[in-house]
Image (cartoon, rainbow, N blue to C red; front, side, top):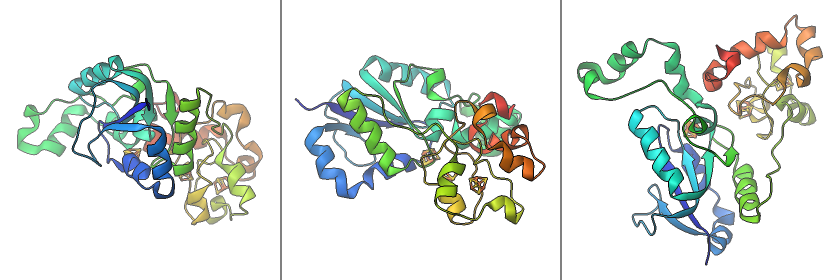
Length: 246
Ligand code: SF4
Ligand code: SF4
Ligand code: SF4
């Protein structure tokens, strides 16, 4: 019997699921190892209500989301928080910095009282999460790394060092030299420093490394008269739930 894998999404753009579907070269290999039993973005059929692995995308922004997530947890042996929205709240947490009633009125206009809402939380604030796939959207190699690891019952090899390491190895021009403030010194690597590679600053979509105060590239910041704390303030775009964004 192949492990049953199901995909679900809460508040999200469903881009993480799209990244999974973009694994074109590996897709047949994946299907030879697992049975996909629920995947609204890719198939109509629902083949099971019990799952070995639930890949859950999106953050929790409504009380009904939280209840649904708890039901999914009861029916799943392994839960994977899939992408920045699920793992760290992602862009959905930006609304937490505004008065919630104002946000409801802005989004739903005249019908704002009809729709339920709550401040955004990450998936692991509602249910136990077993594995995390970082990024907005996640890197395809990392999706494969986590899937393979959980099927083998081992810990995935996910970097816990800053994006700057990958950026320097790639010999990118540091965007600080162009006057930008980049969160690379405190953001978890694994994306290949793709934003600086194209001349953009890192906005921290993969979340913080475990110990930003000791591991961050302090010299790089000191050269520009900045501290780790200055960079941490930039984290509201994707990581608004973290303490450093408060
Ligand atoms: S993490 Fe990014 S790509 Fe994935 S659902 Fe959220 S906004 Fe979309
Ligand atoms: S600060 Fe940003 S641009 Fe500079 S080396 Fe680090 S990741 Fe690259
Ligand atoms: S460089 Fe930063 S913002 Fe860009 S993908 Fe990597 S972690 Fe995300």
